[in-house]
Length: 307
Image (cartoon, rainbow, N blue to C red; front, side, top):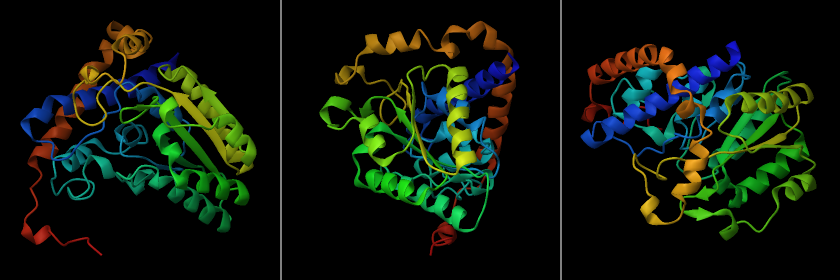
């Protein structure tokens, strides 16, 4: 299917970009800690394919995939990670604070769960202004669901009926801590108490299934202008922060990760995806030329854009 090919192309593009980051990281060209989305790309592409240019996504610090899937420019992305003046935020934000309002990507934050309330506020402002058909997405990991602002945001969004999609990428971990060590609540019961519709998908490796359930959730928010919660189970292939693997730390199972990888179309359809690789690689090379050619900031840039 053409739709599936597009989704796979976008997912492969994200993975190849992050693989390039891994390649560059030891050279210290990347001037920022990175939280990689490898293994979770299907969620971003499956959701963003149904978002309009006027829709906003509030991403978190593991936000490369959503930034790219929503249309964020690649040259400025690499320049930002390299701390260059040509970056999205002139090199001052780095990987964990990506923002590109022109493409509906509203600032990420290194503070867990902090952008959820921002998304709710933006959705409320849209409702007050009488805008129609807009959707605001709060994207967060399952570790954000222990933060107080998460519950406050659910309550406020439900009370004021704002057009927001609460989107949880559930990789089962908050840094090194699993669900059973940190969550006493049942998510379905919690959302039932707020009367927020709850959708979930376990096959977060499958971009086609993600886009199907994402369409249902986004259409419901768009047409009813009320909150919906979508949880998608996924897997983080790399360490919490950084380019490596950390199975030696003992907090997660390499065997279980390999089961997930056995279902990953980017790994299991490599030959079919080869048709895309040269085009994506050329785009990455061009973006890196821009980033490498962008000047480094000077002392005169230190206090610019600071309020």
